[in-house]
Image (cartoon, rainbow, N blue to C red):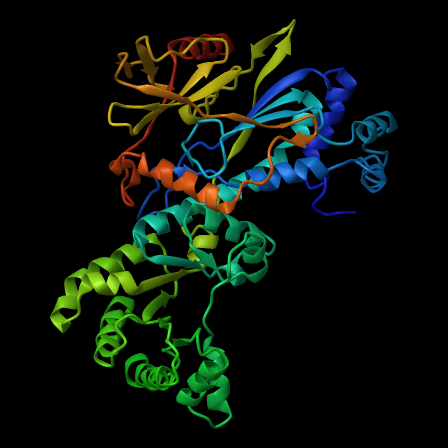
Length: 507
């Protein structure tokens, strides 16, 4: 049995399914939405947006997941506390006949696009039992990849035009490393050290060498320079040497320069050096100065070792301030830097889980959608009910100014005034006049009849979506620290419906 098949779920999805089955509700049309409640807060810095990722793996899984003989046998073996079968035979027969998720229609934000809190990333419509059974797998795939793509996007913002390499496979959570690599590349990393996934995504993998190469030569009575020469002899056109095994400036760098000089005499062009520890900004300045003096002004300097967006920002700031003191052009140095980001990107350092949720928002009753509601003492957890559409609102500058949730049946037009209501505060609203805004519908149909509706989107297209959407954000929303809060709003009709349902539930 495939451990990542249709039973890759929580038990309560299956037990709720049996309740729906016994109550005759299992084929009642239902509507669920998946969204996250707040942007990542990493402690010293915060995200002003997210980058949606994980949709393609989810769609592929939905096509393949099935209740077969092995899965039914596994469920048949589960017992209640009294020792009786947990699941009845008629329910198991129904699951086997149902097979998978052929009754569901999934609409989604296109993968790679910018996302915001409380705004549906996916909308799942279909039989209540099937829609319920999708929850765990959907959240597992979308939440983690979106979290990592968001972190990678922030690293990209901090790095500017510099190359970013994803080095995190060794530190990622087991098979989650595949998802982390994919999400990092969507979010902004240029290359990855992960060989198999890079190949599958159509990219060459990237890397240098580890300290162990130098250590092995030293342990056997050889020198650091001999280790460098051995690497350069095998890879003369791809030589990047790690400088800090012994001493970055007084051992690694002079040894690397001598090896580079030999490569140049043989007609090869050295690629770069890597620094993995110490004061990376100071060391980069000193290394650049010596490489320039030796006639290697274009050799890349790869920085690695617990980097994230804030550390990269600090490194760049320090270089801009200190480099001129040593006769080094800071702008030229910044252009030759490469950032190798590992652990802190693939574990979303400082914010380990996005907290994405999957909530029932409507049930079909007598041919119409009856809104479902959930209230909470926490205002951010009060549900936005009903069958909805989602729009992105662009202002007169062409920048995204709000995401708008509207009831599916209401007309939202650009040639009429548009009032945006705060989701929870009745005193906050603003009205846009025609000509001051444009609208873009966000959710697109992605899965129906058991099949995805489009082939996997190339990585290049996913990156273009991310680049375009981030460029259309207000600079304040893109800030790495204390970003401006992007507006997520409701239409007047949806706000009124929400208030009405809250009053009814509160009695």
